Image (cartoon, rainbow, N blue to C red; front, side, top):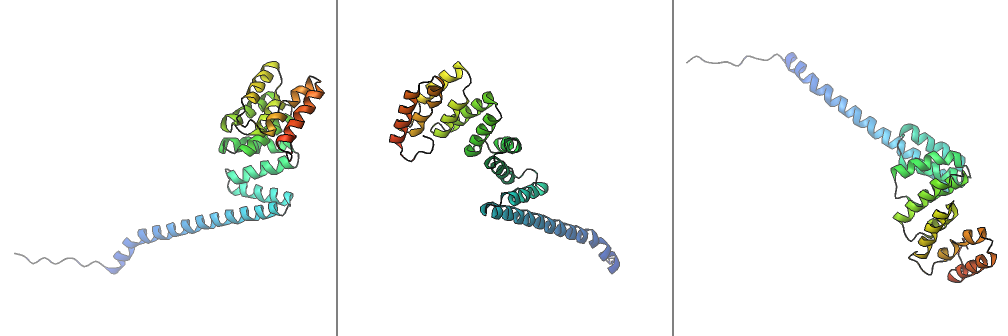
Length: 212
């Protein structure tokens, strides 16, 4: 038998072979650090925007949330907050794209969807507003504000009749909103006494009702 001697590997060759792994490790570390830095920056921008909003500094809050969207165009929180701020400031045209995007990203955000109904009404898009109010009631059948918005957005006799049926079937029978909802129809019919009685019943049901 011949003796077998493993050939010696030169230290320089070991170093060269280990380079790809070392480079890969360094690259991964750099990418992770960049990702963490990006998330930290985004979180910082969101916190700053929320602080402005809490302080009532709406213009600064809008700028801050727009900065968030520059970093993260699909940020659902920033989109929703911009829709909310523009709505509260009475700017329906500016609010609309953010409200529509919020409906797409988070269809269960009932409060912002109701703002979308009001937004559509202010732009005289009654049919779309009525369809949106009906969709909200399908998600939240006991939402009194949505019931009132459904009545306010009815634009023909068919929608009016369907809305009256919904009012009659409203699950919260003693709700003030159930009495307020048909007032818009009573006023349209010039039944002012009926409207006054409906408001009185609403206030009797809930003396603190802001919609009566």
